[in-house]
Length: 431
Image 1 (cartoon, rainbow, N blue to C red):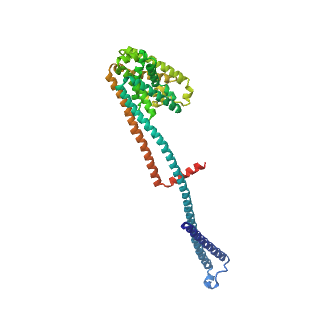
Image 2 (cartoon, rainbow, N blue to C red):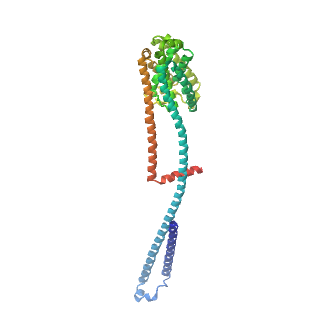
Image 3 (cartoon, helix red, strand yellow):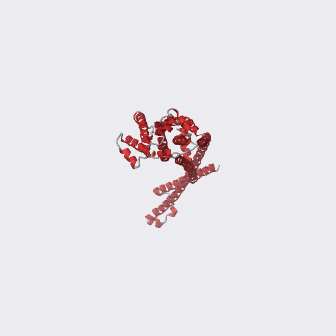
């Protein structure tokens, strides 16, 4: 009601200003006509001196015209101000109408945000329940593995087999969906496959035992340090990555140091045949299996799947080329003409394998040093997992909190930003 009265008052004042302006204009026009004809000047105001002085008459008329023009300008200025006042009132009224529309859009946006938040909370609740179960099972698995190592070491390889059979299908499914499935051809999976072959197919092979032990205590163990594997128990993916690197050396530590000789001779004859660790023999057989894997990898992945790799399917080789592209070694490898980068990558990985297995004779000959090394690897994975929980989750929460604070501060300083966002949302809905 107040707004309508302001508009009516503005219209009334504008009409008054227009009428005043019209009256002033009529008076000015009448004076102009009188000045041209000269017949409307009263005769009683003309004296003999005026007749003797022909300029006195025109001077009087000029003064009258100046007065009329001055009044007309004042009336015109008043009318202009009245029109501007009316425009301001109309503009404010339109602004209030726009703000009401934006308020409705904001209400709609808020309700939809609440719906999305409820849906996200429902989804996150289901995910949270799965993560809680995964965390509990992962922690129980750590306890169970430690218990079996101390109480029933001859069952450790069975638990390893069960876990591998459960985790690898999940890994294959998730990696296939993410187009990471070429990672499944990496050396760590090949080493686990060799371990399964030795445990269940060729337990009497000293050659296979040597290669499996060297790969387990070499590449797999040191990869936890080099690639920062994290024991994040609520994540099936990260738990799987940690287990496929830690469980093989754990199993071969148990086979080498924890089994009684009778069971060991009957179940794992290859470990008994091995006797003392022969460094050159270990280097030879490990290199043979390494180059078997590398040949198969480059044939089936690098060559046969070249088109898919160029189309964007990720491999460990392409990942390392990009991840270390700014380092000196990465720049050198990437600067080589094809197939130079592949050859250089193969040579670097082989050198890493040779370097990582240098201490295998120490782990093989001493039970306590082997246990200390395994404990260090497990502690490193646990520390990386703790870093993930504290740093990654903490920083993620901090970013969300800072973003929320910034949005609130912006709305307090510039309320029109909320209207703008609501208008944009409305336009998107119409499109």
